[in-house]
Image 1 (cartoon, helix red, strand yellow):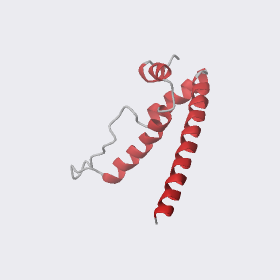
Image 2 (tube, rainbow, N blue to C red; image 1 turned 120 degrees about the vertical axis):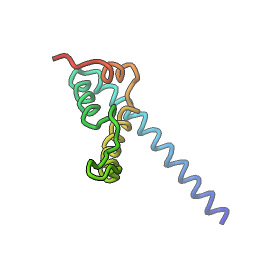
Image 3 (cartoon, helix red, strand yellow; image 1 turned 90 degrees about the horizontal axis):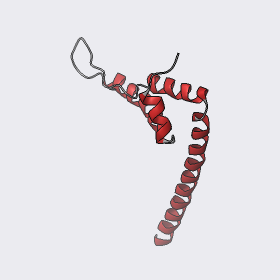
Image 4 (cartoon, rainbow, N blue to C red; image 1 turned 135 degrees about the vertical axis):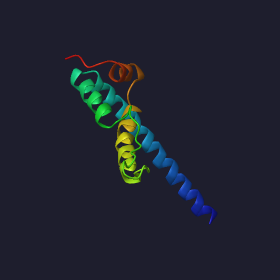
Length: 103
């Protein structure tokens, strides 16, 4: 069993290295996208559409209870933006999330 555990641990470590390499590559891709006006506009749209700055909790107006399905949906949508924002440089996020879009 010890040999099998070592093999699983080696596979896990290899997988984690691949994930980190992909994350590094995606950070560069996201930064390149955000260097464009269109990319910043897209990220601002995702920020708003995914409800990043809003509460995910939905209350059923008839019962006053938390609507767990709608709340889970909102939180899942929000998680998409959180994943993408983790790949973006902080200075570009500040411009996107804390300034109004110029019309």
